[in-house]
Length: 261
Ligand code: KIV
Image (cartoon, rainbow, N blue to C red):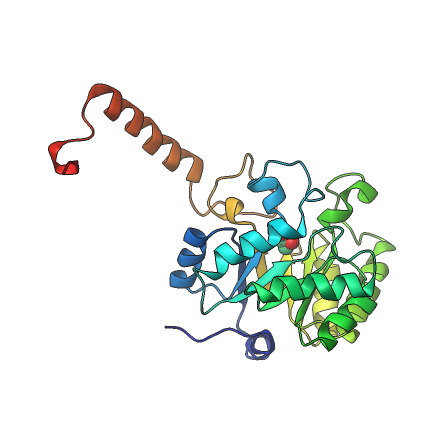
């Protein structure tokens, strides 16, 4: 078995110049694949609202649904760090609500939680409860309605805003921070100024690690996003297998006596 990745351990990886590889996963089978391939961090992301539930945003995802998927992933995962997303509405009301939601995710097996935006009081209180917190700035999908769509953040004067947020999230005690869809120059400045690892998605090459959504890595998403790379042609491979299963069954080629008892 490989080493257990911990929240403080990510800092050591950063200091050693080792890139941190993170991916989302939402179920047991995918977790097993992450385990055997040697991923560093698995995020049970609220992007499951898009890719699992078929919503157009992550806004409808509930804490109960995050608890369910965290349990599924936990059963397949030992070595990678399991970070679970706090969904929209589970930490935005009060510090007490944020701590109680984070505790729920930890109780079902998360190693750490992630939340979006400059919620420094909430981060401080969750960390005080003994729970490692990952921050998330730039394009934060739960605020898509405020942004008016999937838009790159931190351009022009916005750069200083993202830099300030990242610094205050580190000061609040976060062990790492996701930088999503911000210019490469801005993510470089953040990465150079922070002492915690930066994990990029659409934030260029200079981050300490990268995170991708499962469906984007495997070519299962509807279209290839600029910040993603399809490392497999998932739609083609699965589509061809399904077509063959249908034709084999219809023609009587499957099952054979080999498949029978
Ligand atoms: O929910 C998610 O998948 C995320 C990543 C895109 C960072 O927050």
